[in-house]
Image (cartoon, rainbow, N blue to C red; front, side, top):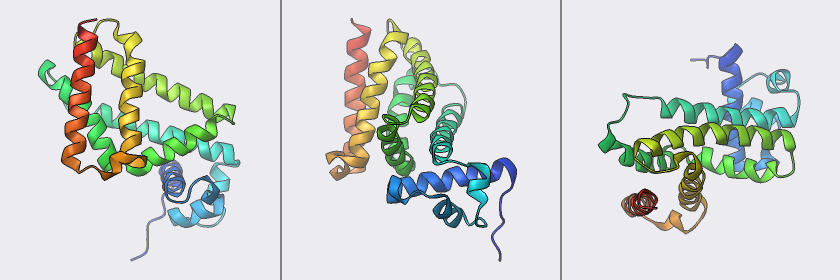
Length: 195
């Protein structure tokens, strides 16, 4: 059976998905237009047709990961108040479990963004969108000044994710990691509610 070659927006998504996989597994040095074509199973030249420059390819990675994050956060029925804290725990635990390559690629791209303003802009815009959603959840959890504290809460969650895929958190069992995330978020939220 031959592999169906995606077209249009599906092809753009396939290119971005392949690029993310390459950044995660080979680093930025392994990311070339030709390597993306091979990884995605596309004819040679497909990636450069859609994304002419390396910068455009890197930005496509960031935008694709943001698209996945936003799609995941909008899935399912709205949580009840009792489920909101658990939702934050699940955001960290499930992302670390289900999309570790996205996380590794994101950290690689974040460092590269310190040298590329266009890429930095894409990361900043995406981060703002995600923090706005987090601020809404924090407000629903009765955290005062949710808009202001969304940044440090997001930074802590990101630190837990980073440690899980690139630090000593890689040595924890799944259960120990989840318990640590739950305890850390519970302590942080309790402190924020009583500020």
